[in-house]
Length: 466
Figure: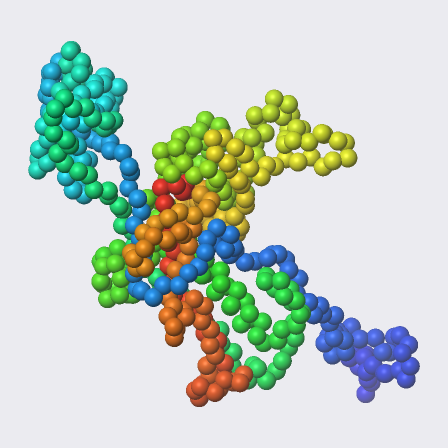
């Protein structure tokens, strides 16, 4: 019998590290001999991943010990009605008018007051003096100053502005008085929670990772690296929940899940919700021309006329503002003369602006929350491109404190008392990692906060939406 040529002879190890035909391995698994080169430091491919910072920049935090936060904001000083029906025909020397505006009480007009009446489509206007008022019916009668009488037709819709009063000699004074009307607003805190858990067995095998964290710390972490990221994520949610929260409508599934179907017991009024409900909304894309910004400025004139405002915008909106401002420079058509500088050949071209003044001061800053693809960035619908926030603070009457208080336009109220502070709670449970609170073979790190955002003077905010 003969020896088959296949399989061939076995490999013969060499006493020295010499590559020979007899010690060459063709199907070598590197794990049998070599360990892979590893980097012990994480590579920060996404940079700073946190999206929180907005409220820290523009707001403040203060304690509250109630389930409900209420405050009063001033109403308008002067009186104007914009949905008033003309009950008499054109050329009437005196005419009756019915106020159809939504009212919280009686109409605030009195005998002897002088009014400007303007037809809403521009058909004509008159000035007159009020000679009779029916508070129960919401009507008043005007005697016109013009000899031609009423300049607009029967059943026209008009706006009525009170501009003064006039009385004959030797007459009594004003009959009625007007009480100031405050707007009462309220919000409720929501409870935000998170948790990190690691088993005792996993804690027994320690692996080290060198990291640089979003809060600036550097060094080595072991199994608690995930706990650290849970903490950072929770801190982001403390802000984003205040921005995005909405109240649960009565009868909604969320209301049933959170509060047994009781109206008003679930959800909270976040920043975007409040501005959409009580503020100003610029829809249909970003303002890209001065004319569009002028319409915003004219709206601000009708509100609080806050001198300084900050625009928190996404990247595209920031570019649109830069391009709009650059277009105002007659030498900027070719894109070579943005900003104010000497065009030195050694100077990098500055193609951006940090702000501008047009009636008011506007400062522009990028808002990472609107750019981050895991948050508001690249949403297919319901996108928010930016937010105009007034700078400074305002004085309101705090219903809970029972006195006037100076508050930032945006501030967070968190639940706290002498024995319980729920601004940012964290505690450890389980039986591992030093904890000894239960028979669970794990360590659980819990996070909790109870807070609400108070948006004062929402009429001074502008939200920019698609």
